[in-house]
Structures are given as C-alpha cells and as structure tokens.
Image (spheres, rainbow, N blue to C red):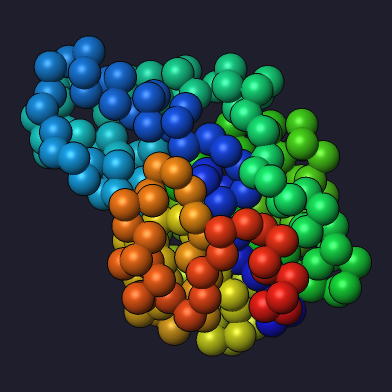
Length: 212
C-alpha cells in the first residue's frame, strides 16, 4: 500500500482516555444515563454528531453549547499533553520517505486535531488532515470514505484505512477500503471483532512497515 488514511484518536495519539472523559463528563453532569457501549457508538460520530446523539438521549442543551463544552474539556490536553502512540512518529516518517501518501480522517475538530499534530511535529507529513466536519457527515457513513478517496485522487480499494474503532473499521470496509485495525486500550474488548472485520490488525505501529 502506498496510500494511507489514518484515524487520529486512539490510532495516532494516545488520547482516548481524555476523549472519553470529556464526552462522558457532559452526560454525567446532566444526569443522562448511558449504556456500556456508548464510546463505541459515539467515537465515529465526531463532536457535532455526538452532540446530536446526546440530544436524542435526552440532553436538553442547545447543540452549540454541547459542542462548545466538548471542545473546552478537550482543548488543554490536546494543546499541551497528549502524546503520540508508540513508534507512530518514526513509522510515519519512514513511510513518507518511501513515497507514501499519508492522510488523516478523524471525528476530532480541527481546533484540537491540528494543534496536537503540529505540537508533535508530524502535521506536515500528511497530504490531507481532515475532520468529519470537512465532509459534513460522520465516519458512520460509508460515503465519507468514498469522498476522501476522491479528494485524495485514488481508488477507494487502493487506500489502507487504519482505526481503533470497530464501527469505523466496519463502515470503511463496507465502503470498499482495505482496513487495518489498531489496538488501543479503550477498545480492547472489541479486539477479536475488529480482527474478524478487517484485513489486517496491528498491536504496535512498527508492524505497519511489514504490511507495506
């Protein structure tokens, strides 16, 4: 594979604990009950999609206020603290040097996404850095992967998509992409399901070089 489309949270950076706590804080603060699979459901939806989902769950706040709270809770961590996952930076640099096209598609908003990638010194390695906001839909919609492929200028089946989230992996696969599951502590209970629904699975980013 020479064209890669990476998720961000839980794939490139070790941010899922921060993401989860920010998202659940809003529900907890407002006394909204939720099931154990809430993180699996909301992770592909993005900030706006999650806000809409929360309103369906019974959260009676304006959608703009929900989005603002999410960004507020996440901002400091992404700006200053969240690290890249093990071997991510070195592997991305090696792939780039080999002539690969590197791209990001994430549910995270640009305000935290761009700042974090720039702080880690890897923003310029990517040909495209996309938030779901750029496509006005979510990673739960197969069309977003087809639109990303079109913007990259490559056939959808020639792109390797990498994500730690089961729902996103399954949706990208249904859109025709080659898919590699990525281990993250936040989704470890879904490891076997992800393996069953993807073409590859990696526990450490260094394994990606063997696939290429």
